[in-house]
Length: 349
Ligand SMILES: *[C@@H]1O[C@H](CO)[C@@H](O)[C@H](O)[C@H]1NC(C)=O
Ligand SMILES: *[C@@H]1O[C@H](CO)[C@@H](O)[C@H](O)[C@H]1NC(C)=O
Ligand SMILES: *[C@@H]1O[C@H](CO)[C@@H](O)[C@H](O)[C@H]1NC(C)=O
Image 1: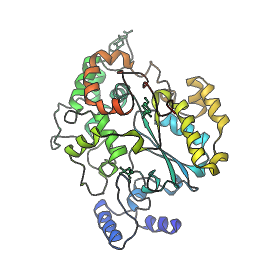
Image 2: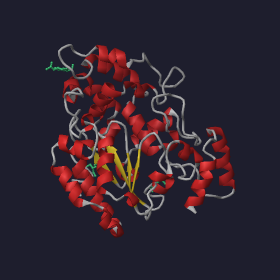
Image 3: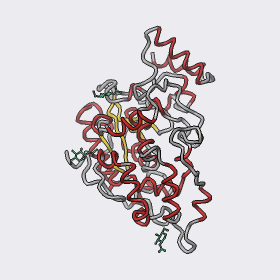
Image 4: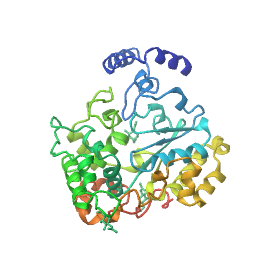
């Protein structure tokens, strides 16, 4: 049945988002499975297929270990680890530029998936984003037409130009602060916004994170700033995923999440390579990056030569980040600007 749906989807890969909305309506009228949300999109939609979500990414043998990636939280490294530790047929790793297929949401069908999210200390996130892709915070969506536009937009070149001469790290703290101020969505932070579209209201996602013009074709009934503000205040980690990874404690959290997955899905026990995970955990960050074949820039400890120290920015940004991303701090147990959470879903059992 799935094969048929994929074949049908392949014929339709050229449909536009507008056609797709009509198709989704027809499907709903015909009482076929829900095409959009809440917080997900039907796996079989041509839209997902045309977004690069190819059949090769399906998990073939539910219950699946499903990881939802988030930009700048160590996703490349995490993907490399999951690919080595969880058998192909049991895993699905979904980047944040495609909607999450509904079948993979934890409460779509508890038997079908174990859904894992990843978060990072918001200050660390901003230090990393400002260094690598500061324009993302102005694109999703952002512009003079958006209700939260405040400007001025700070470009990557402008940020780069502020780098201290004899110090190869990130932009100067005052420049990073100016960029951060400009990226706020009302009184909330861009990280909270990106978290919201990735984990809470997937139907509101922008499927191109670097241009403000490619939105999910799902109905945008609850994508307004007031919806964001209301949902952000109500963020409840346990309701959004079966398990959460913190970037700062990634491999330890992953191990605990995998143990919970196997406890729920005993049939998958033989599909987790515990010794491969233990070897990665015992390796140095540089060795681990080589072992999973990611660029050394993406090694799990985010070495200082590339990223500015988060600590170098804390004085400049802590007040605004702790206020703007207060709901993330609360929901994920972060108590300091930079550094690991006080407790994780994992350490508290
Ligand atoms: C999952 O269940 C929670 C709690 O029952 C609910 O609030 C949430 O909307 C559900 N999510 C989905 C995607 O159905
Ligand atoms: C490097 O740059 C950061 C960010 O501007 C600054 O806070 C830090 O003090 C600098 N370190 C050195 C050794 O100059
Ligand atoms: C936050 O910490 C509490 C214990 O203090 C724990 O129960 C909860 O799971 C943690 N939340 C997350 C998302 O890590």
